[in-house]
Every structure is written in structure tokens, then in C-alpha cells.
Image (tube, rainbow, N blue to C red; front, side, top):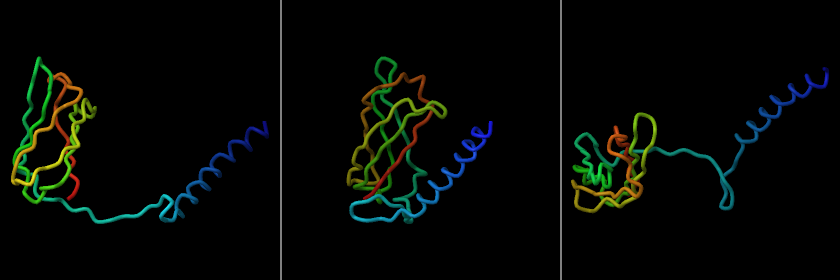
Length: 126
């Protein structure tokens, strides 16, 4: 019984030691590190709208209209969701230099339209 208690006490100590080691990671050209940076938006997404192209009851393409011109040259990726569950991912695709503008993104694995309740968009760059 005494051995079992020692084993249970050793686990939290090992986890604390591992956490302390993770906090001391350094960034080098041949290593992995941590850091932070300010993230800003490329523009207001308030006027962006989405439309779906359907074929045989499945979402085959997503169109994003009203993308701000300040997002030109960025990369767009989106996830089609049903509640909290992802049902398809689209992109990445480049945002053309025609803003405010539109971009059409094909869906590689089209989900049923009835399973898509929303779309989550990530725009990175330029």
C-alpha cells in the first residue's frame, strides 16, 4: 500500500517539473520557442456576406462578398459548421486585389446543405 501512495505522489511532481521546463523554452534558428505579437484586422468584416452554391443538396462553393480592400493579397480559409462541429473546411485561397471584392472558394468535400448552420472565416496577411 505504501508503494501505491509514493507512485501517486510522484505523478504531480513530474507534471510540475515538465511545466517548469516548458516555461523556459528559448527561440533559436534551429529550435522551437514561444512569443507574442499584436494582431490587427485587415478591415471591418461587418459588411461581408456569404452565399452558398448548392448541387444535389450539397454545398459545393462558398462566396464571400464585400471583403474590405485592405484585405487584398491576404489568404482566406473558412470552416463550415453545424453548431460547434466542423463539417467542411474550404481554402486556403488568395483574396484578389480588387477590394472591396468577392472571392469564391470551392468545397473539396461538399457537406449536405442541411448540415451547415454557419461559416467561420480566417483571413491572414498580407
